[in-house]
Image (cartoon, rainbow over all chains, first blue to last red; front, top):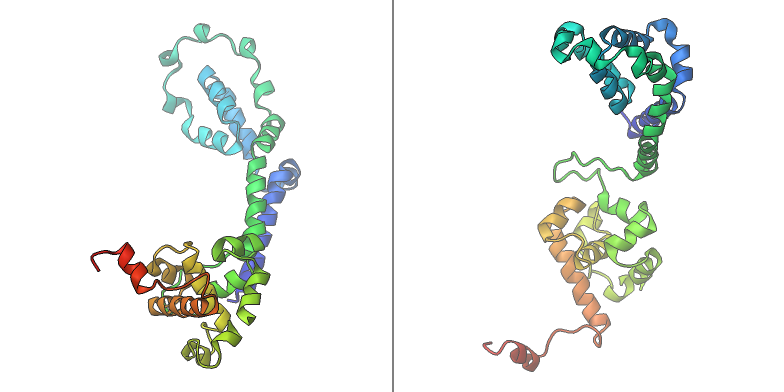
Length: 178
Length: 89
């Protein structure tokens, strides 16, 4: 398989990931018919559990993946009975704490995830910008089709050339021709 | 350094085969080693994916040519300087 097509596919994957990060609600609406609306069901199961610890941890995590894992952990039988945590009167009624719908609506969590994943988008953009300089290193010694030295000399930016060879490119070519 | 080295100075074997070991690549290897970026010769060999002997040879060729080009700035120590710094010798 040629390397160019792999790179193109990697770029397309990154584009898709960035689109999913930037427009999660639009893409979720478009794909809700496919039964990917399970996050709402996760929150529904959270309502069934309804303990204070779950809400607190929900605020702490604040990401859809964590809610999904919470759904896996958090059936009432797994956590234990409500009396183990303390009586319902000690915790307080759910309405006093603040309704679960206010905390846990899908839009709020989605926006929270947007804020939290700006660094993810930045890192993805960094990855995309550095893809032209990516050289696969899973080679054994003696393979000459991976020409790292040539890539250092020709393709890498000026700063990298300066750090590697301690001189500017034009100086290098000057002394080569000297 | 191509003209100064002249015909037959640089390592011709790899150049004849058509990969690695163009003159500018030999100079680049030497600069990489002398710049200290590569650490040991073995590490340089692994990073640049060339042989250890090539790393040594290219570095030595470049150093010798530079010493020939710039005798004022770069020279091997004379025998009295050498004795001064290494009295046992």
